[in-house]
Length: 136
Image (tube, rainbow, N blue to C red):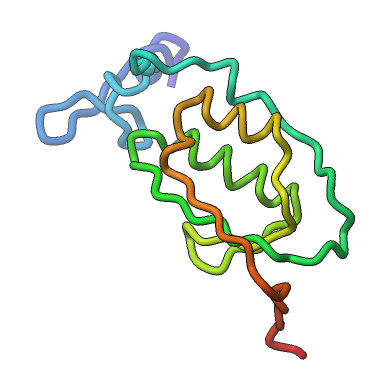
């Protein structure tokens, strides 16, 4: 194979069901348009706001936090879960967590600021929650 044949081979396009694809079968229009459509009224800067835990590692878990955040607010929901883990909360179900109380005031203020405060409910437990692992 001479040099000019090698150039033609590199420029060869493949088609699958009428769509131009690369050698891996990925449509070429997907590769060129890597832009993501931003949803309006969503600020990027608040996803970087993190809080440090004011609780000790062995603090009693005496607060249940339940939330129902819609799927359109997935980034906020994931942000909330990450911060609850930092605070030492344990997930009982996807939207039910138990951990130490009280939650920091600046955290609660921030939750209201990003407009998910109405989707949260907290309940104080009379006795602290005892988390048992399968090995115990």
